[in-house]
Image (cartoon, rainbow, N blue to C red; front, side, top):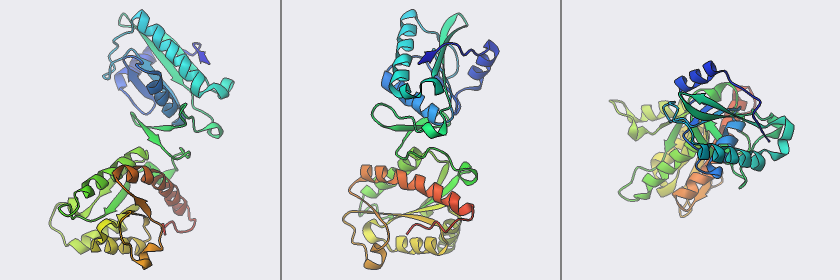
Length: 298
């Protein structure tokens, strides 16, 4: 499933090296593992295809491949092609071709844009990867199509949670888990939390302004902090899509407990549990932007 018939001009190749890594171009000095390379190929195939250039440093400067490294790289390209693209056959195949640049040999692997009906491309362990600019991220949703329009812009995420770190130090871990989940969700975003906003302002008015202008609110009810109930109420009144979370030992009042919650035992579980709801929120927000029913999460 590896074809060496596709060819770039040397001028095009040099331009790609000069421009640096992008959504569709990746540099690698070598292929150090088949598993790692499979993730990169799957992410690029799911994201529209592109080129993986092997024998090049992170700055785009060719370092070349030895004969042994070249043979190993070709073998691993073949292994990946057979492991994650076998069923696609003539509809999608990897193209690999060698070039001599500055007296060194580099290998250019062209990754096809997989037809939408055949996505997502998964690695052998069933994982799905997406590419965001020059980063490879693991995602849990099989819906890799970035919604048009609104999702292309930076989404504003407001986090409502307790600030009582002296009472519960794990709150810091929970906040970082939310950040990691957002990164892994492969969306452009900016996180807002009122205690991180500097300046001279009236707190209540600022909170209302920040929530009303947000795309998504993540409200964590751990410790039952009054500010979270207040901020979640503003989000609902402003019809902002809200994702509710709470540690499993949180005593949630009945009138709030009827809403949908993500319950977690630790930061790792919170991170894993948030990824798919975040991706679903983006889809619902886009549906609302097209005039479909309200997307406020209940």
